[in-house]
Each structure stands twice: as structure tokens, then as C-alpha cells.
Amino acid sequence: MASTSVHLPAPIVEKLDRLAAERQTSRNRVILLACEAYLGEHQADWPESYFSASLSAEDLEELRSAGQEMESTILAARRDRGVPPL
Image (cartoon, rainbow, N blue to C red):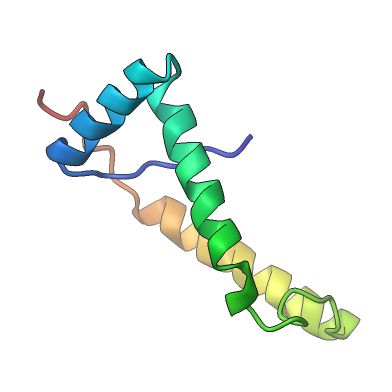
């Protein structure tokens, strides 16, 4: 499973933690379910062919190369901010 980092205001984290405790699950699971629900509600917002692979092999390779270049640039620019204060 992919991992991501999201910065949330403390009041939202507190609400997430309360909901997770009520449901006897993890904060991560609550966030995952919320994301799935949101995406399900907005699935129709995407044009039907938006995710189709109708690009030529040349266009796909150019897109793949650009994605790899962008990822390399982002990774090179990242900074470790250390552990956030409590």
C-alpha cells in the first residue's frame, strides 16, 4: 500500500481520534474510509475516457519520462524537517 504524509489542523486530528476510538479502529482507517467515500461521491466528475490508455507508445514513453524526471526533482528537493513538536 502506498504511503503519504498529510498535515492536518489539531482540531481535525482530535475529531479523527475520537471517531476512531468510538469505532474501535485506527485514525488511518477512518481517514482511508473518508477518502474512499469522497472519491466515490465524485467519481462521476471525471470524463469517462479520462483514465483510458489511448496515448501512443511514443506519448506514453514521454509521459513516463517526464514523471520520472519530476519525481527525481521532488526527491532531490525534499528536506527532513525532523519530528514535529507535540
